[in-house]
Figure 1 (tube, one colour):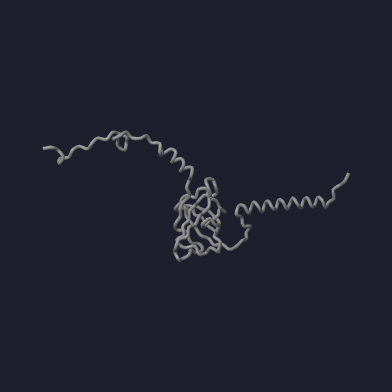
Figure 2 (figure 1 turned 45 degrees about the vertical axis):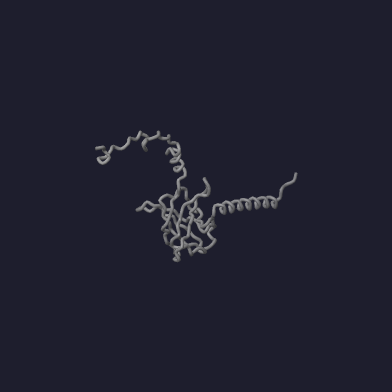
Length: 181
């Protein structure tokens, strides 16, 4: 009977630790984590009436390219709007002052992200500025419910000569001018 030496046990243990570490790095990288390093950012704020399923660490994109992430989500106690803090990579410091922000979704059931649409203002947004033009998240379940239960396309046709309410329409009464003498 052969016994395993401490070298083999050490090698197996080191291999398992390396594999677990690789899985951890892959998991963090796939969720857009930055490990606390990776470049300078500056903050912008945006107010939305509805953020839907938007979460911290969600990407911020311009034209489909990720330029930052959602850093924080809070609630304004006076206006009861959601205030979203965006951490934008400092390489993109020239976003115009009339940039608009919208909460969008990748596909039907994909992740939510903040999409920025730069405007044409020559003045750039500065760190700490608030994006003035925002579009809230669209609630797909509510939209489908409205379509299904509003009778869209399912209304019964009105009878010929019927008014908007389906009741038969009557011709208007003759006026003084139209009465025969």
